[in-house]
Length: 143
Image (tube, rainbow, N blue to C red):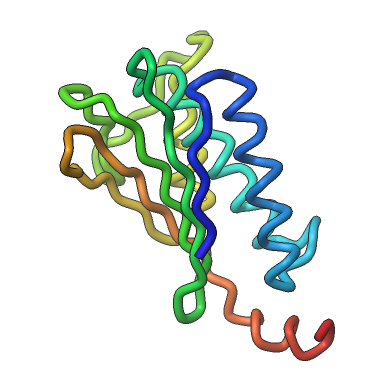
């Protein structure tokens, strides 16, 4: 498992994406692969949401990555309670000319599964999984 707390700033969100693809590469899921690109998009959107909508002054957000059978699991946790994003069945497209509101649509399109979880102490975690059925063959080729 990979776990990192990051500042709830745009810089922290950018760093989350870079750390995620670097960790996947260390796990033999190479840069530029479908799985790496999908995870990069998911982390970018969830980290941006944590910074924009989940920020609590003085509190960080957390990125967790883990390998679960057949998948990479991404979890982004923030400290804000009370404002819960819509879940997979409730995401709606924004008005066509809206300048924001598409992040969870991207997550919904790219992730194989995702959900929003409440956490204690207050806050929430958005968890998404990207299937990597060929992961074992990638490990065999590289390591």
